[in-house]
Image (cartoon, rainbow, N blue to C red; front, side, top):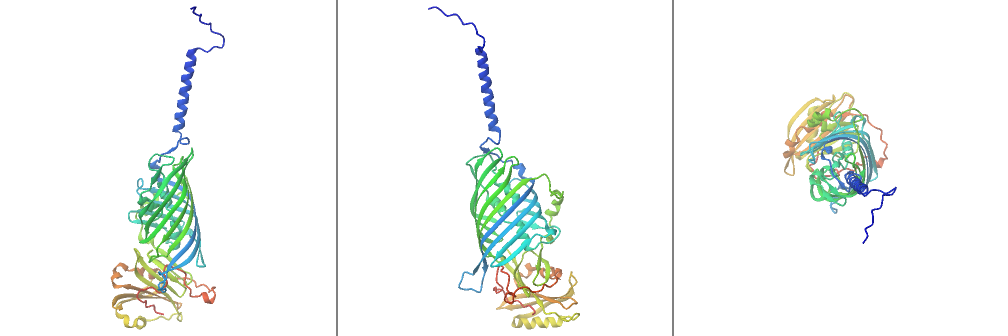
Length: 497
């Protein structure tokens, strides 16, 4: 066989070694490109949380909450029912604020925040009674602290009203929203369960007794991760049982490692409590968040940390302002208003869903300017009003209040159906002839827990300008719906009318 001679290279031929080298280069480039694409967050099907980023950050937040359902009021007069009187409710709140927060360590649920509000508005309608609330300018800077002993929400400079406090607390604590992110690397389709204590912190609950909140990574691209949030839990709020079902979506900003968007449907049924009404509602909540370098005001959370960690009890007091009764005062946040019709107001002191005392505030008929009731006359009126319930006077004193009003205070011991009861009566008056009484009623066993609550309330009470009546005659005297009707099973009060 004749061997063929090797062909002489022609112009344009590529040497075999060069082809092999080119293939190796192509393979190297391809492998490098594939590897690079796997390392880019936008191309990966995985998300890994960066825990240190959760500890301290500043965000801008907008929240819109829309509520429909029924409020369940306690109605002890209707023995044929289950004691719950339903009333329709519709409400909408809008919050816009900047929040600087610090968490003590990863996923502990312990931390504090400074929120500076630009918008904080609420409009609700309960049983045809419409209320509009806006956070006052002097209360636009709110601090929050949460630890093992629960939540504290306060304005450092001025006491908030109960409605203002409820407005800024809302159904979700935004400083904990990043806890919805995974604690470790996850792929699309992976699910993770939040610990009960973290679920409680996110939804402003005292504790989660049963159930869970599940989060699923459903999609991911270079910029965002999409989450599905589902859960059904039984929990407790201020000693009251509640059932909460959560259905929604959330979005992760992968560049900032931030939960940037949340939209959930909250279906909640809460029992009637001693302090607040129950309800059965559907609430649609939408939240948007973005990280910002600093607060617009120039303030820093760091400068307030000592104040927040050592919050004076006064910072937690609430302002009670009766427009109809034309007076206001500052008191412990455990006091709840259950009736206010301009003539009488009824409040009760509640601790852990247990009523410690009642207070009835009554506007009395004006006297001639400069004329005052004597201590002896006031004691006679009290003894006459109590009748057979009267036992003995324990204390009687007279002084000027912090607001310059004349204050007479009398402590009385007696009994109702054989049960020892203590009353504290206070009469406030000014030189213009205006008179107002406060009557406190409590079991003798609650007297020690009650302490000197009456001195704070009466001492800070001041008269405000009376408003001209605008309601139709049939509406005058009708109470604003509250947690309980006035005819509770408490020992009868002894307001000096």
